[in-house]
Length: 274
Image 1 (tube, rainbow, N blue to C red):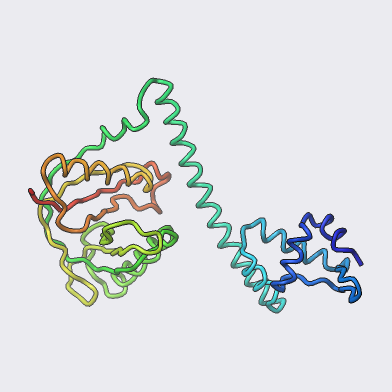
Image 2 (tube, helix red, strand yellow; image 1 turned 180 degrees about the vertical axis):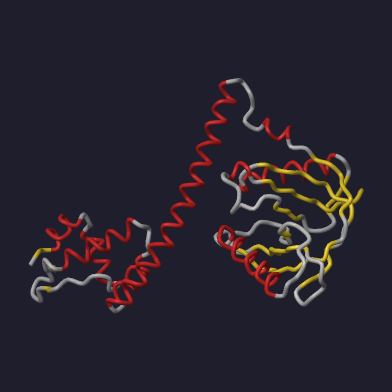
């Protein structure tokens, strides 16, 4: 048997944490001295503690770890296999985001070294007035949290494309997203995923055409906020106002573009003169 201090030292976990793990039923002492309350762990429990540490290093929550441990052996292995794959995908997305951020930081540093403002790129974002035509769109409208967007875009567009293929509908344009919420809310934003098609079937509606302020981005999606800022400034300066929710059209399929820098996205602001 190992005292809680010895167990703590070997596993690299504080005694306070071990007591908390005991409270939530993650790992309990093998023996507690009734007279003095001292806690003791068996040598065999080292394996479980190291397993818990491993899953924590993969950023699993304690609740997820407990669920995996409590599963029967064969079920636990299957659940762990799927959970590890999901965590791996999440980490790869985070690494990709960090790489994009580091690249942007390097470009900003270079701008400063050359005596240029890091916000000067806004001047290169072009805005033009265009007349758009009405479209018949197959759509799916959802409340999307900030955590949903990365996976949600692919999932909801996949559902729409599957319906188009299953019902043999006629595709007329690129996928698009329409944003209805008037302010950003990390808990949920009213978002519509849509694809233009020819047939008027269940799940379609008309998207009206009209005058739009249009801009385009070639780059990663997080940079779209700069395009929106520029469009808002332009519409105000030129005496226009937004009359319908803005929308984006994805000219480039992210699954076919090699790097985010090659993504091409059009942003439309339906407007009228004030």
